[in-house]
Length: 111
Image (cartoon, rainbow, N blue to C red; front, side, top):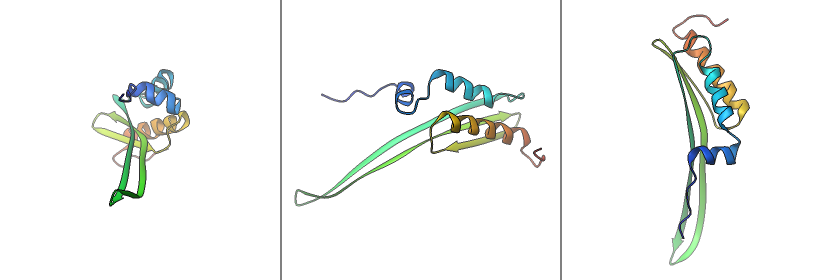
């Protein structure tokens, strides 16, 4: 019987503890200070490989890519921050960073 794939929100909640409240908090942080738009991107990809020689398994491997990104836009300026670590602390830091970049892009000094 084929394995059922969970809904993405359910997957990230179960695997990394990212719940609706955490997502709302992250977007809220990114949208502070008159930011016009913000979005989140999550990635979790697994690639398995097996090398056979005359029907015998010679080697195998697994490659996992995971992470998330936060984008914030204020007018024409955009800020983006990402992390390979998916947890609430990293989400908050990325949201603050993306917001700060969008607010101060274009040579404005960051204070």
